[in-house]
Length: 257
Image (cartoon, rainbow, N blue to C red; front, side):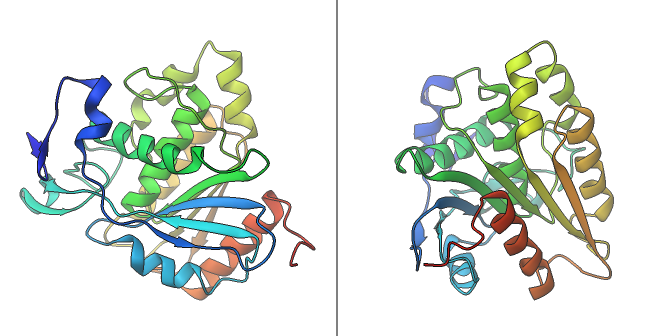
């Protein structure tokens, strides 16, 4: 199977290079730079649309990096090409997992964060499939490695997922068992999940299930916020909750200069 203009080369070692990612949009901090968050768009979208929204948030100490996913054939669209962080046949944790695609996108996120200064706190967030990729990155961070076994190189301080789901949910608990380091990293990583109970694209029950699986796998610091009647989109009240969460978790209180 080929993805965009590039075909997968010789396995895990080169998989991350074989995906042709689109344009990255950066929103620079308006105040003192204290944190950098990579924000991932949903299926069929691009980094530009989210960068415009994130620029309006009252978070002057955060640098936002908004990459664009590769264009690839997507099973849920009958093989029609679309921007997607990985191939997906079912927008839930029930579908088959494209670990190779998720590893490539998680590595792209980690590469974007790896060049940030050492004293800057790092995070990843996203919407829908972007949220799924952010949660996959969280599990790689806790595990200390990608699905292909290569080491995960950055230390995440926060993860946010809007209207998404948890990939590889069936194997997560087993993956993290038996490692004290993984248990420590999982228990200390703050994760905010937001989901509307009127979502007809990624059903609310998948958001609920994601929170349950994360908690039962050792991610103790998981919050699920429910929005009554909200469909598969975001609203100002939800983004206000994201702002409060990031301000608290990243210690941005009183840092508006």
